[in-house]
Amino acid sequence: MKKNLLVLFLMVTFVFSSAAQTVTKKGSPAMKAATAITAEQLKDYLYFIADDAMQGRDTPSPGLDVAANFIAYNLKKWGVKPTGDNGSYFQRMWVVRKVADTAAASAEVNGQKLVYGEDYFVDTNSGSASAPVVFGGNGWFHKAKGIDGLAGVDVKGKIVVIYNETNLPKGLTFQDFAGKLGEDFADPPTYAKMKGAVGLIVVANQRTQSNWANARRQRERGGPAIEKLNDDQGGATVPTIYISQKVANGLFEGEQANPLTTADLKGFEMKSEKSGKNNRFRQN
Image 1 (cartoon, rainbow, N blue to C red):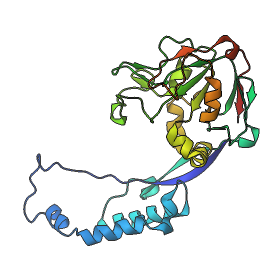
Image 2: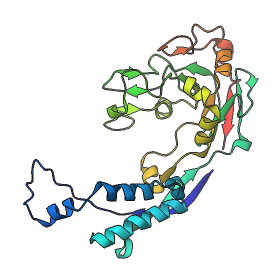
Image 3: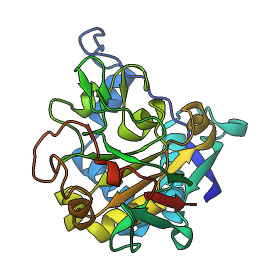
Image 4: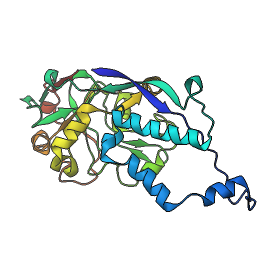
């Protein structure tokens, strides 16, 4: 399920000059303007934008509109030339927010029917899957770092179970995501889809488990995305559910290892009785 929302985006172009490259003459307009900036003034601007009355400036929200109009007002006062629609400081764009249809969700793992909200929750990637399960390690791919969570595991046509104790695997930081998605690096949902998987099961780490209700709300609600830019990124990945550690312990019982008790566990094929097509889930 997705909602289309029309949002006004503030169009501002700032030109920064490096002090090492450009010497500003004393008494120039730029220098005079710089000396007019005070900590108290900046504090006033920040306090206004960050005030609770802005309601977090969610996209979209009345608070975001107020903040945008405040910035536009000041830009006009300062003489900044507008570059938005119809000579304004704004540009209209369609924003999409996907919302999970929790009432239509269902899941069965290893023949066990799961209770929504207690055993599992879903995100906003709609779809269904019914297939054998395999363990895919951390599920990440990073070419330069030599990280391949799905190495040695045949995931085509299967549901992949992954686990990460932290948001990113060891040796990988957010600064490492340079290059092209799908070639130089890939997150677990993207990589699973690239390898032909039909679904993804994410085992809750300790942080998610201890903050289960909030994590569930965030995943169900999703986040805003600019529609055309989102389409350029290749669209949705495989349908994904998040299972509790209790369910995961049951799933890995009798297996060669349990990712909850074995650090940095590599991917492996699950036992034959768990690889039958008694693993299915649906989300809309």
